[in-house]
Image (cartoon, rainbow, N blue to C red; front, side, top):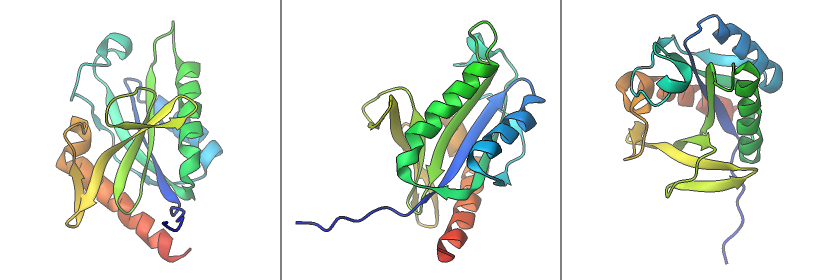
Length: 175
């Protein structure tokens, strides 16, 4: 029989994308109200890796990654994804999103994203939310998997996630 081991708290991250650059600050403020101060913001970059969102959100999408100072328990991931869904809906116009917020977390071993969509590589968390290991940490850096989204596996994004993981590891020392 194995001994039950509870996971360490994890680093909450989010990817935000929209065509309307003026929305970034307002969304970040709402997320900070809910989850505490940010400790990392990437620069805004072109989100041109897929046209999946074009019919709903239009062309010319911009994206950024953020992370939060407060660490979270894994049990919170599904409620966080449900909160971001409500926020997206609140900003929608004529049932079309103008902003997309994808929450997830970084641990020592992986970057995990929350999703409302089931697939063979996703695990159900409850409350209609699934978890996907998107990147794993090996040999000093994050590594992609066959299903990793293109914008998560480019070097610039990997560098961001490595930096956030470094912040996270410093926080763990202080626990």
